[in-house]
Length: 125
Image 1: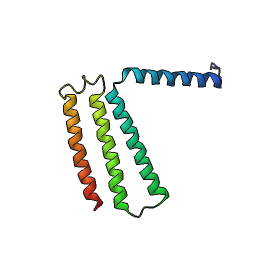
Image 2: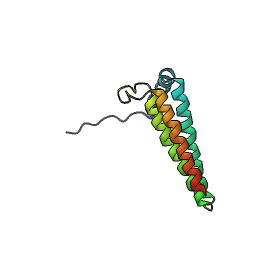
Image 3: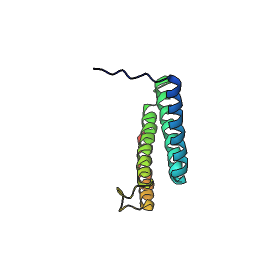
Image 4: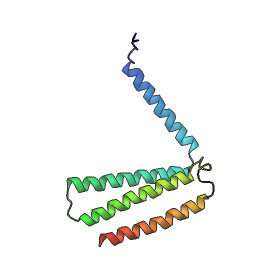
């Protein structure tokens, strides 16, 4: 009683995946505001910076461990703060963040970033 489903053709799967990716990219470019795109690009930069720091730590040296811990912790903390800001500023946020204005969210982000970097600087020694 098992029905055999035909296996998809690899070229059809590739074309469907490419079409889906193209649709996703077009929707992102047309519906997302410029400030959220800027936040997304900064998130990508911070992510790549963290990956490079971790790769340097693993592949080359771990000698100044406190420098790595401070720098990597700062990168991770900034990523988390920025992801929170994006969640508060992104379109369709009104259901979850009614009482927080976008200006207040940005001010909170700036204050938390300053505190985070003071802790990271203090951790360096």
